[in-house]
Image 1 (cartoon, helix red, strand yellow):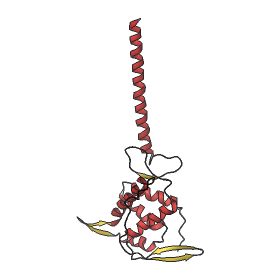
Image 2 (image 1 turned 30 degrees about the vertical axis):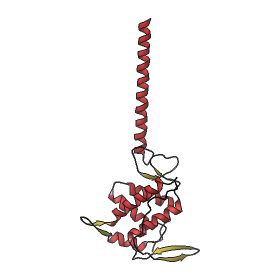
Image 3 (image 1 turned 180 degrees about the vertical axis):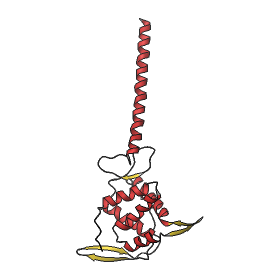
Image 4 (image 1 turned 60 degrees about the horizontal axis):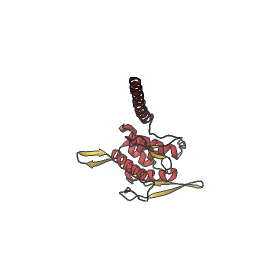
Length: 200
């Protein structure tokens, strides 16, 4: 079996948050699968099972795919963490539903933990995210600075917005606001010159 290439935890977290925030179901599902595949726990069996036969849950209109509900829970959990990052309030938290057994798999001097294959996909994904956040930290996880955007992102360099689209929208609003101010100043100056010319 080919050895999986190492992906830094920061990159995994960026992929997960970007995918969870995306409007496309395929990218949202990919974010959940990324947590299973590249998270701190070795969840190969759960990942295989989820790819072959996605987990479903009974809902009002019948069965729904569990990854969509998990995505909503993860986003609410992340937004709660970021909202209260600077306060003493702990937020609403997130609950694991079922029992989960972890097995230790020593690899040289390191230990990799493997969740029991019978554990619920939802619980494994939540635990993967929690462990990933603990590894990476919250320093670079931000809410977009655009007033009308609630999206989360992982900050790189001096980034203030979740996307170039939000950045352009904010800059265009600032430009238009400044343009209106300039136009008003020009109008006032013309009016002042006209009044001064009428007096002379």
